[in-house]
Length: 482
Image 1 (cartoon, rainbow, N blue to C red):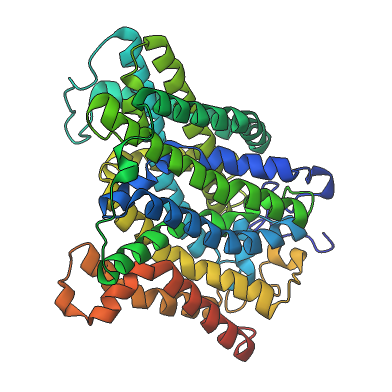
Image 2 (image 1 turned 120 degrees about the vertical axis):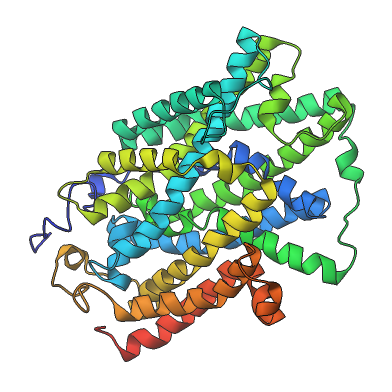
């Protein structure tokens, strides 16, 4: 750097990655996405859509389209990371100000804490089921603890899996790169093995594939499709913001774009399809549709095969959790006070907040998980993505002054460190989705707002992204220093 950075805005974890450390190839980026996409929550994605009335093909197509769409802001926001070696919260300083960047960074970080907790709970459930298979106890016979609502054994396994996650947090980014590259081919192979088991055990693909759609008219189909598509975009709306945290290590723009295109939509669609195949087979084999792969595997006749498969699910969940739900909040919390909070410290904060959010309650209802959790936070994160892309590609034409991002009173300080244009665009873009959210969580009756306003919430990410992009593109040229 030509100008000395302000220690209140800089530490080694937030500093630009030097060229010598930008070693992630197309395979590393693709493996990152395979490792993140192959997890139990991806496996169960189709269940919520089918539960809303879609047939299997509509559900899988919705998942594919959602991931194809989110790939666009993903690749665009990855560009400045690769070009300048800067992480997500530092990039936010260009559009929200050197101090103001903390607000959208924390919005992203808090969502990641929720996701960290959910994935840790899912991984802990796999550990609990593994213990049940090996030691022969019935996991259904449990006594919930007061306040927590889960048993002591479930909570202990949750904490055990949590501790494994913390180990990789302490080890840092290189251990994450190693974990993703090693686990990716293994996880794909296990997924295909599950498909083979389903075909053999059910003597075909089972009844879900012949189940017709219940959405037999446009009036029924489009609202569910719109909400489902928004939820699928929302699933990775988080990473579409903080992808610079990873792309800053890529060798080139070609590596980051090709790696993401190869790894994201293909793996998400394949693993969601595997979930449909295996669940359809469970109707034949066990007499009921079981969407939770932990429950499916725990019913295998051979306890050691069950144990190995459950450990595999735990590895899949670990690889997703560390990359998708730790890296961003670790950097986001570090951005609050770089002199006091390192990447590792930020990761530890994330881990503890993940416990306090009671993630088992967030995940217990598949419908609420998809149509409340995913859509709800997409209404907040879509506008941030729109502002970031408008600032970097429309206003700045891909030109940043990296050293100014680390100076308190530099080119990106705006008004006392806060960008009025950035926050005005953010607030105005979030506003139209508030009525639909209040109706959806039953705080207000649908009659309180016009139907068009309420229905727009089904497209929350798209509404927020588009409005923010347009508003920022119009306001920034008019107020370049605000």
